[in-house]
Amino acid sequence: MASEFDLIARYFTHPAAGARLGVGDDAALIAPAPGMELAVSTDMLVAGTHFLPDADPLFLGHKALAVNLSDLAAMGAQPRWALLALALPAADEPWLAAFSQGFMGLAARYGVDLVGGDTTRGPLNLSVTILGEVEAGRALRRDAARAGDEVWVSGELGAAALGLRHLTGAHPLGEAEAAACLERLHRPTPRVELGRALLGVAHAAIDISDGLLADLGHVLDASGLGAEIELARVPAAPAVAGRLDDRQVLRCLLAGGDDYELCFTAPPGRADAVRAAGEAAGVGVARIGRIRAEPGLAVLGADGRPLVLEGRGYDHFSA
Ligand code: ADP
Ligand code: MG
Image: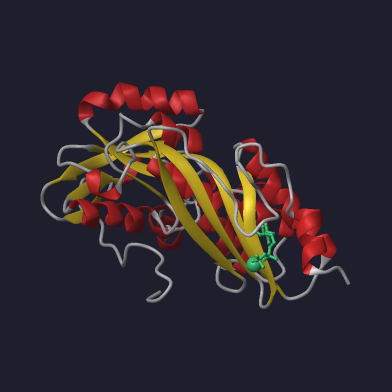
């Protein structure tokens, strides 16, 4: 059987043009450009909690990196380097080849170098650390929303959560809709270009990993503010849009995780600049509401009355 070192050499050793030293030594050596801060984040994907143990390794490789890129996107940072810590039940080479293809394919698209990691035997667990650069003092922080800001989201919401409900049998979809939703669930697009384009335009930003209401709630808590959003303005994925009378589908839109779109705030006077940022990044942006000084998050229905909500999103410990 291949040794740990063979596996690292075969699947995880690639030229790291953007690092002083990549995989192979006791540590990698990297240097941020002058005037830039390092933005650093880690995300762990655990079999049985974040994905099914028999999930396609090509998708897992993509998603393990995508969720980390999304965190940097939400800071307005440019991803540069990644580390990958893997616990594997066995040295399954076809699995590793597919996983590596998914991971390295996305890394190449964003010019991210895999500069190190750890490989060990154990229950399947994928942990990625991402490092990026952002102009010093200019990152998009959760605590930077201001009263009067408008609230925006990128792309369309709800497809990933509806795709998961399709997979579990809770909400079977037709073939075309299922394919579209599963694509969003398995291969999210991190909004890196949008995050970069929003620097100097947006005040606060967050990526939507646990659901719009939960993640916007984090911005509100960190900023000590509240917000009002209009349901009719929240951009729904096509499979979701026609079914909002169904409470569970409405929940996918407002509280469904895994979309990895950005939610951000910007002053009303910067609406044109926000739209230009969306255009430059090739993604739609929709204005869904407003930040207000009074605490609390209200969602107004079509009749202008607040909806009664049963919770803000998906919480791993209290759901
Ligand atoms: P050490 O014993 O010093 O921790 P390892 O044997 O764990 O070194 O790793 C050898 C080299 O391979 C190191 O540079 C480490 O960063 C890298 N590495 C190990 N696993 C991975 C992986 N899954 N992806 C990328 N690099 C890895
Ligand atoms: Mg090690």
